[in-house]
Image 1 (cartoon, helix red, strand yellow):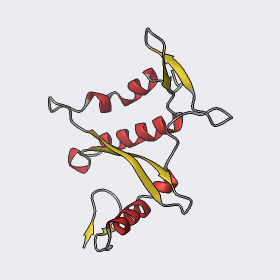
Image 2 (tube, rainbow, N blue to C red):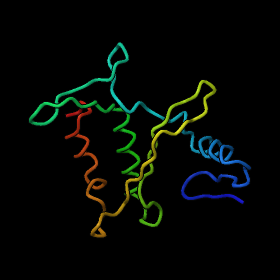
Image 3 (cartoon, rainbow, N blue to C red):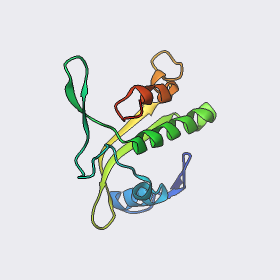
Length: 136
């Protein structure tokens, strides 16, 4: 038995949950396609910027992460609605063996509460330009 949404087929007979997870990660090249979530300086420390009227410290998103997300959203919206209900995203780390360890998974739905295309997805480039990645 295999599963296929819009990506590679995954053998659901993989046995254990871990084997199924590893098969999913390999089929979708999760380890190879991951990008840093936050921007870092030469010393590896996450960049921080002042945000809001009170200047509270916020972590700066990486331009690589924003580019990956913008591309995924634009591909999802370019296709027919039945082809993509939204975008799944994953924050992870890699074990020394290369195994993907999930830390957070989220979904940005294609449609908002009113049934129209989600404002966040429709304005993904505008949102990124206003955001704290350093692109503005």
